[in-house]
Amino acid sequence: MISSYAATRFDAITIVTVVSSLTSPVYFHWFVDGEWVGVTRDDPSYALRVAPGEQLRVECVDTNDADADPDSLAPADQAPATRLLWWVRSLATDLDHYRVEQQAAGGDWELLATVAHDGRTWSYEHRTGRLTDLTAYAWRVVPVDRAGNHGTPVATEAETIVRTPDAPEFTISFDAETGRVTYAEAGS
Image 1 (spheres, helix red, strand yellow):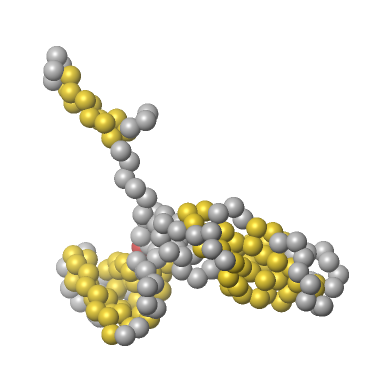
Image 2 (cartoon, rainbow, N blue to C red):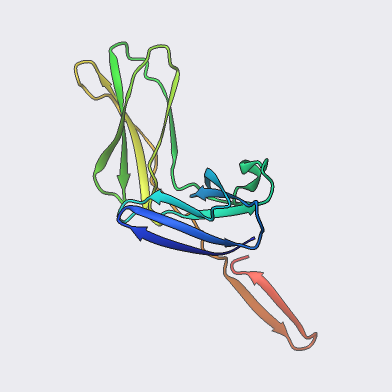
């Protein structure tokens, strides 16, 4: 069982070190923002590149089982810090590519990727980079023809990224007659 985490930063490299109560051999399964990224054996440290201002959640699950399935060890209820964008191809005959764009906090649209059009492909997908907690994001896909003309974009509504939701609010009441304390979620 992991009892503590420590992080040390050297420029863009962050080293996360954990303390485990298990004895050797120990397999440390590392998760970044809820996704499995690797395993170390008897090495309670994991190094990763973190850009300035970037936020990551690094978690580790330790086990003595060499054959442990990382999917079964994944931290529960992890909201992803990325989004998978999916769209169906345009039926335009002179299409060249799609511009995948992102808007953060109502600002300007930023180009995330250019995806080449393939007439044999029915649907496309693109995974965003890591998203900042408590920020509203919108995405759009813009078809572009061979002449460079932009078609009608397909856009999502803005959504606010919340990796760790607020705890529910409770009301507490005491009935002096019965001596009972009642807890109820506020608003219910």
